[in-house]
Length: 388
Image 1 (cartoon, rainbow, N blue to C red):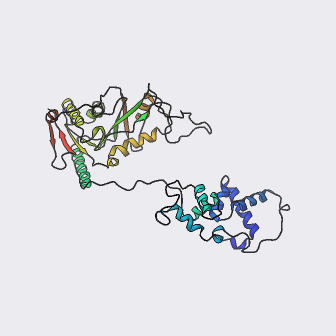
Image 2: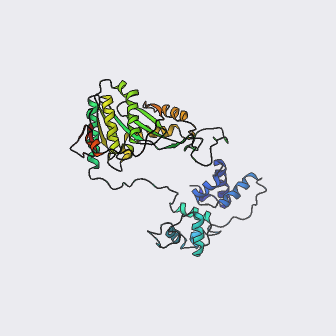
Image 3: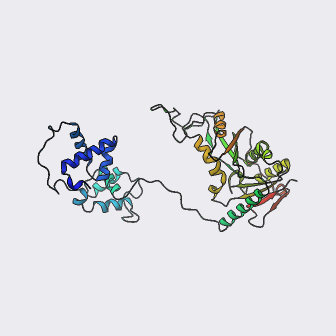
């Protein structure tokens, strides 16, 4: 609005004042927002701190004077830059930058080879002016969908509602990401005194005495409660079912004293996968010990992110221990148990230092001995194991 009333010097001083008010990074910000050279704004900043009488009062450049913009003198610069950024859609698919990281320095180097005299800083300004910005990949494209994907979601939802209607427990289970134990970097940031961050190891080499842990979670959908068993050995089906048993003995049977059924929703793979025979065999033992009829419904392959435990429990555990090195088993247990939310999430946690042997095979005969009944809809995903 006021630009038409300013001559060159007044405009320079005004923008310099704006940059000074912004503070650190102000010159670059004002330059980006107005298109005025950062050198011009820097000159204005120097003039602001000098005495007015010292500033040269010489003649003012006439409108339209001065050096022309690069894109006005080099008419093919923008089109060539655009072809380097998106070679498969707009330019040459054989572009030398087709298979390399497109940094501003590499772009400037390639433009110079094409005959354009441009610096990497000017390339960055041109990209911003054309609407480009640094962006990461975005997970939005689903993989191959199973034809009964939505039907299985509806099946799980209806079964969950039925169990909840009659006061029977419904849990979501899964294994959280394995974690190294020790003074290692943990993602995220947390407030500390300026210049005094927590010091951690440079390299993430496993410490044999501490090793890794496998947090296996059980999330009670109805009560917004969770149990996490922190295992120190292999993540097997025996460990997964033992974690469910720990939840039942510690929290479940207290919350559901009259329960005679249990519904488990789980992923289709991993230690609780629908193809794993040991998973079913261990559930039979749990059913015999607890007296519960255990129904299991698996999410279709590729849909594990829909499992309740992922965004109702695990995500909040990750937030709670962000930037905190997991230096010991005790620290891990305490951080998990201290996890809560404004909606009242309650979490309990315990260590499981038992040894779980890998490679246990369940024969066809042992499988037939299970007291297992299957649903008519996708028998491999939906089944019930009753006590013998």
